[in-house]
Amino acid sequence: RLGTLNRLREKKEGQVDEHLQSMITANNFKDIADFLSPLAGSKDQIKKQRFQHFVDEIKFNLDLTISDVKRCMSQDTSSSRVKSLPRDEDTIRMISEKMIILATAKDNLHRLI
Figure (cartoon, rainbow, N blue to C red):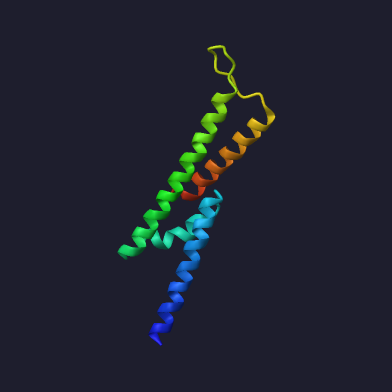
């Protein structure tokens, strides 16, 4: 009976890990702390490692998002030395979307990371 419970627990943990990974890949950080907090507070070494793995993945994706914003901000500058804000509507929209991702991540992860 204990073996059955352990297999069920492992299956559920695997499903949670898959869901977390898909959230991170999609830059969907809304409510992600609810999934990460059990790992963050665990004394179990394996759970701590899983938490650190997800933190590393989140940091990597957020670094990419920040790089995208910086690239967009600098690509639309004219030949003058004065930096100007992007004028292209699509670029502005993309920057806005990326900033929303960053703000959502901050709001949802500030207490864990």
